[in-house]
Picture 1 (cartoon, rainbow, N blue to C red):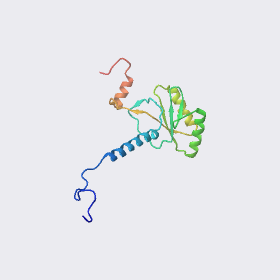
Picture 2 (cartoon, rainbow, N blue to C red):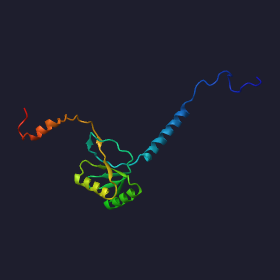
Picture 3 (cartoon, rainbow, N blue to C red):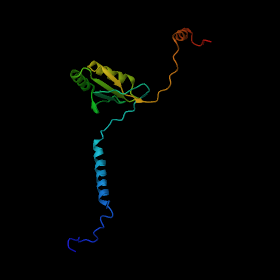
Amino acid sequence: MAGGSLGGDEDGGIVGINVTPLVDIMLVLLIIFMVASTYIVKESIEVDLPKAATGGETLDTTLSLILKTGGQIYLNGESITPDKLAAECRRQSAKDPKIQAMIAADKTTPHGEVVELIDLIRQNGVVTFAINIDPKAADPLPPSPSGEEAAEEALVPEGEGSE
């Protein structure tokens, strides 16, 4: 048996593949990705957005503003005072005159607080802004009356119908 193998049948080859090491490696990779994914996810501030059918996506948003019900303001996820927000708006608008702000406000936030926030950023150089909404299905709008019908309806006193 010169030149023969030491371990048994020569034409036998590998009959089965041991998948245990493969499964072990896959489980270790799964655990690594699960642990790493908790560090990748960015914390978010919970806001209950109002729904609107006509909203669209806005691109190139630089300033992300969130207004909570209690009047708390967040700029790009960080809590900020109105004075510091005004200074940051002036600084950002000096760098880029076309800067845009995306404003998200909880739907229970009073309208006046949202208007005050808009006024604050506009007075400090950020004149382009958008209101963030949660899209909903569009309700079909009733057909608008033609010019003559609209004029006639405007002249008809309350309680009387055109027959």
